Length: 292
Image 1: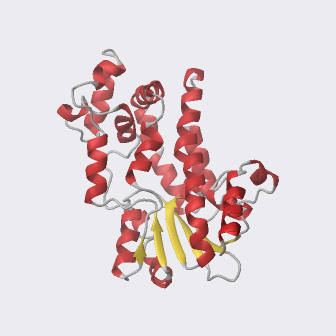
Image 2: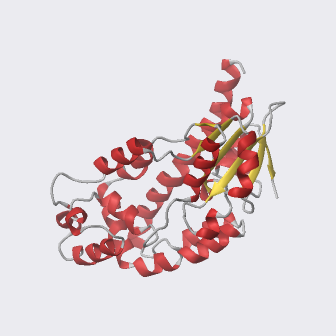
Image 3: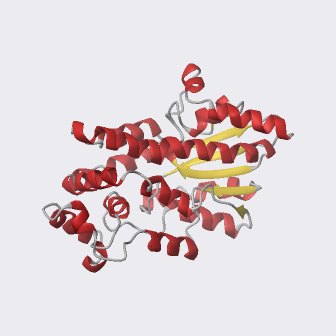
């Protein structure tokens, strides 16, 4: 594809979301989607659940043949040793600073919830607010590997080239660059409502297993605190974790889809909605079809 056409299509992505809402399609059901551009071979997008639940992992094997046929496999992230090292270094202060930042009165509850997630108290006091928040949003005793990691293993076993949609620093920055007051407010709220957040994991898993991406999004939205004081913090959080990253995913997928033969797998919440990856690709001229 010539440079001019490529730049024009990137400009089309940047013009969203107004164009998306004008011609919105329903992408609320289905995890596997065929995406076509011109005469290029078909590409596929798959919405994962970042979970190691055996019911979720069982969905990896049926994708083996499609991944084997792909020219390129694009997971959301590759969590190799270097990525883990970068994350660990970025996630802690050089001193025991978190209790002071969240406030001594709030700290005991946060520390208790972090302990439930297996965080050593000597590490907990050094965590940056965003890292503590992400920890509390994960399932307690989360099982490994996740579906995402299982799919990467499948691709590599079949000698398919693997290139992540994001680098670990970009994922970190999506939350670490939020205002610290937002990080702390959401951390305190996550500790306060920890039981409710954990209780939502099973309904979210059931919705994903049924391919109900819209329902998954509704559950996520319902978990946002009803406290008016937190509304703006929650909006910033969701815009950074979903909206801004949806644009990045679509931008990086588009040139590969023009070539064809890519299989991309990333969080299902990025698929649907007027600002989702599928709507963005459709607005850029791709043909989208659900695969049953």
